[in-house]
Length: 58
Image 1 (cartoon, rainbow, N blue to C red):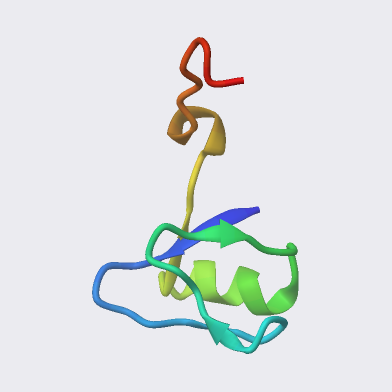
Image 2 (cartoon, one colour):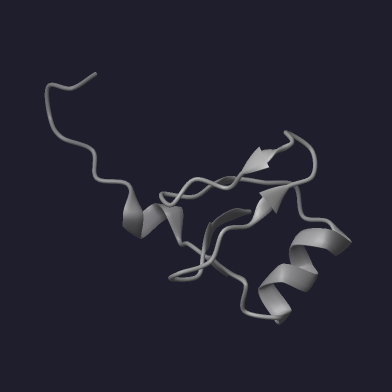
């Protein structure tokens, strides 16, 4: 799932041992990340809507 931190929060990624970028990143669907979503520490981003493919960029 693709998540990004809620506004104003810094969330540590336990797998990569760094902070989740403001733009978000793909993370495994695990108890840790599901708990962050439930607690509204992060939000799930619909990557289909967030990704804009421009013609000629391939």
